[in-house]
Image (cartoon, rainbow, N blue to C red; front, side, top):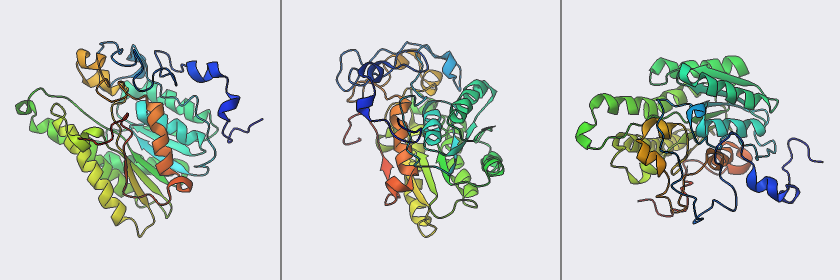
Length: 325
């Protein structure tokens, strides 16, 4: 019998269980049936919009973001992590994966509208027998970036891993419609908070620590409707390169995950209904990723046992696209 920290061999998992588990409700990615090129894998999202910032419970089709099929192996045992934008989507999946690897996990999230999602994520973390903390804070406000770090350290006593994941986007149909206020807010959330939270964390990160930033395929190739978002994600990529060099002498690794389209509450909360319905169909796989498919990239970059020779890297899980742009 496997212990909780031992991976379960694939052969020990019934085929029906592997293919059809659907945690969290709604249509789910099924290994072997919804992969690249599978009929019906794309264009099946409900044409739905929800209020910003978006809650998982409001989605007609909920993402797979609880890492139900993931088995940890103690890669992060004894470590403490802070994940911004950690209440849902990629952030939730990463939080649960880290917990399953043995880490205590703090999540930061934007507003009362996300309280339910944050509480659920905390419960998923605590199910793994580790400590959890949720902190509500708008990271567009500079003082809150240091605040979430201090709250984490006060709760856990230390900080070993920082995941800068919070993000904002708002599409425009014409460049002339992109006003300076939106540009400034996008950069405040997507770039300034990464800089300020990393700066605050530097007082606590020790040799062997890790920073993992969330970039985007849009930061690699641009996007005519998400001009400010794409530019901010390009800045995140270069910030990653630069911090990796700057923190090398401190033995703190800095890397980035730049996903392609991922099905999260942010999508129906920020895109028009018709674009929601076909979201992800442009990827070579013909569909968007589920957050559970992206989270292992963060585990890899956070775990020194797996990625000790990696710093300044942008890992791009983009659904089969080999040359962005």
